[in-house]
Image (cartoon, rainbow, N blue to C red; front, side, top):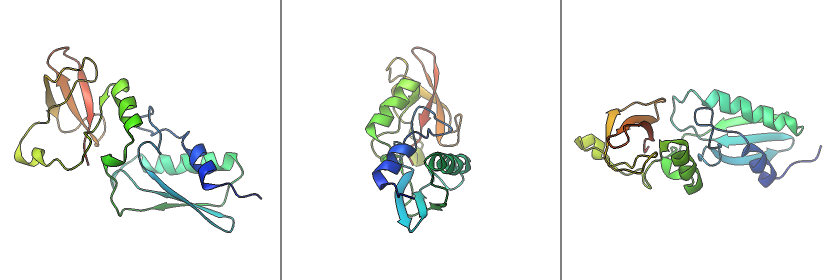
Length: 163
């Protein structure tokens, strides 16, 4: 059996969408960290977006299915929690995909502690671009998103929280 290169496997796994946000893949989201070979054992190293993310089991299964398509059946999924995943790992291209999909992407840095001081984030509506928005709930369609509303176009939208 010929071993596939790390680049080939990364390219293949880039076809796996995030189960909760199908417009971006697991590489763009920053989940896939490494591919390692030890003989015929292929170890895929991934970092969960947060320790309780319900999508991780689906992602692990999707990785195994995708690798099986090219004949790799001896697969180990290694979850690493340190360093902890951060929204800073989301590529700029993925942030633009989120915006086009109707989700306000995270800011460029996860170092905003304003929410601890009761300060509201100034977000642009992904629908109309207005900054006249308000948070409706700290929790949106998934735990990693907050629910906002645009006061100009009146559309609700998710904001991918900085972590």
